[in-house]
Each structure stands twice: as structure tokens, then as C-alpha cells.
Image (tube, rainbow, N blue to C red):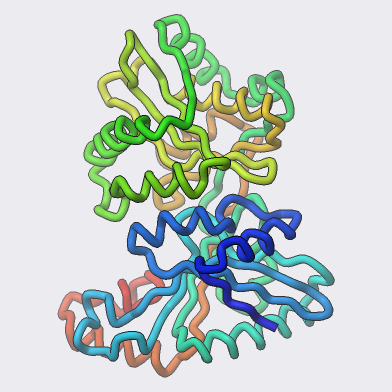
Length: 353
């Protein structure tokens, strides 16, 4: 059977999530609260259980009529699509997982989604959990880039996995007087916003990647026991910052920024190294750094790869069309209303491209 749990029952939501051995930060109710504030949709926990398997997945439910291309063209609150929150997700399963049990799950899943008028599903699978594999038999799964994680077994293991050039940068940063601190003071988020937004300006980021103050306040209040703010100081000035999330033995490099003019001091290199050392001392097993922009092996990916030359996780996405006739109708509406619409775009769902 399927249960769909809302944030109104966040205690029950988190109780279910924590009952899964492989749960991670992205599945806790507090994580999706911030992205609800950000306008990504209504957070829902899908909980499936039968006599063979059980599974959980967090999704953001979006009203398609509120998309700029469909306002005034669709009935409000009639058709929806769902997507995993920013970061990583997808179903975590426990039990007797095989082709038959996954097929039975998918039959129930599709029936439930149709009842909810959900047209399509887009999933960013969790590279560390390798949870894309069961979905290859029931949906379209596309392998994109690789992601990097650090092994936090010991300080020695952390250091040995870092490439020599990066070790030199870390030593140089210390020699030049950069120091790393960390804490949970709410006032740190004001400085973080300044530095992070400056980084986004420099990188010419899309509007989506600029977060409001109430988004950061949600991290502080809703994930208080699951985050730590790390920051680099030089001559009394904060020059780089990072929000580190963690749960169930895993750390995650969530959001970060650095003042461009101080890049020669390599503050971000030292910050990640010290965060990893702190994580190891706290008993965490891994520190997931993620991949490159758009899953490319770009400069960001190479920066992360320099922290563990032996790591390479596969990042995959999943696509499912649940109600094909409505999906095609939405694409047609888009075609008629937008002369620049590209019907061959790989973007999913196509009607939102």
C-alpha cells in the first residue's frame, strides 16, 4: 500500500525515514521545508509497503497551471508533476528486492500517481546509495556525470587520498595565515548570503540559485542538529564559507561561496580538508562533495576530484510519464503558445522546457 505524508505530520514523516537503514539528510522533513519556502512545490513523503518490500521517496508536488506557460490555460489544481528536491533522492527500498517486487511496486505507484493527477515524475537519484538500479526496469534512467566522496575513516586516509597538488595548496593556505572555524550562529547566514551571492554573481548563475533569508533560517531552525557552518578567515575577514549537512554517518557539501579576490590563498581547499577532519572526529564515514555543474567534468568537478583521486560515484536521473495523453496535451499547448519551443529538447518534462 501507499501512504503520502505531508509536512503537517513531520514527526511521523521523520519516524518512517529514520526506520530505514540507508536514510540520508535529503529524506528528512526539515530538508524539504527550505525548498518549499524557495517555491519548489509541496513536499511529500511517499511511503510504500507490502509483504515483500518497503520504500520511501521525497517529492515536491508542483501545480502545472502555475507554470508561466500554462497560466490561464489550465484549471488550477487539476494537473501536477513531481520532482525530487534539490540535491539527491529517489526511492530507498528494503526487503526482498527483485524484478517481480519492483514491478508490483510500480503498478501500485502508477495507480496512486494517476489518482493524484500526477502527469510525470523526475528523479535525481542518490549516487552513494546507487538507488537508480531498480528503476532501470520500470522507467527511463539516464547516467550523467560522476560525483566525488571522501572516505573519512581516519585523518591519514583523508590526507593520503588527496592529490599532491591539492596537498600543496592546503599547506600554502595554512602558511599564508588562513584559518578555519565553524559554528551554528544564526548571524553567520547574513555573511554567508553576501559571499554566496557574490559567487553566484561571478558565475552568472540562474535566478534559481539565489536563496532568500527565510530559506537559510529554515536550515538553522529545521535542520539545527544536521548542519554546521564552516568558514575561512584571513586577517580577521571571512573569505570563504560552506554549509555542511549531515545525517546517518554521511556529510554533504551543500552550499558554498568564496571571495574571488582571495582565491590564490586556496581558502576553499583548506576549508574542505578541515571539514573532513572534523567529520572524521565526529564519527562520520563519508563526505559527499557532489559533481560538476550540469554533471560535467568541469573545473568544479576537478576541484572536488582533487580531494579523493580514488572516488567515482555514478549520478543518474530518472524520467517517467504517468498520464501520456495529458503529457502530450501539455506539449501541444506549449507548441501553440511559444514560437521558440524546441520539441526535440532533452529537457524533462518537455512541456516545462
